[in-house]
Length: 164
Image 1 (cartoon, rainbow, N blue to C red):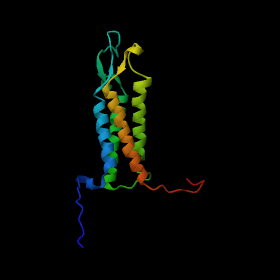
Image 2: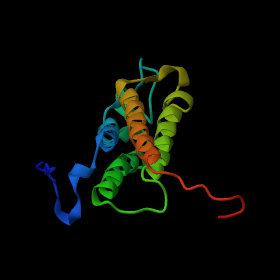
Image 3: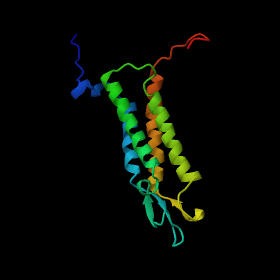
Image 4: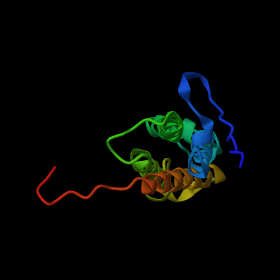
């Protein structure tokens, strides 16, 4: 019987794309969507009375969220870093995907808080959410889902009580 040879898609630096599976691709798609969503319209000021820092109309997260915009862009990098770790076959002291899941959960929380609890602009009732905010919410869930599925792959070694 002839053994089949599985093609290897090696990139520079030893990264092998054949090691990546659906989990990493879903998480990377979420990362790309999250990065794009920062520049999509998140808020609408509505009528003539609403404004966000003196601006009116449809405004993106990039235009309205000073620090959070950079945190979301950094969170969008996390699945690509995970894919690099998996593609190179690097060993970690924690399950692969666990840190990416924490970053994704943080991004989801930031997006949720800035859309539901703390909307920018005045008066408060005049600011409505746009479709870019929904894209960011879905993107962070895609990153979280891919990362959680990857972290479940690793068997956790149970330690006896009292051992660090």
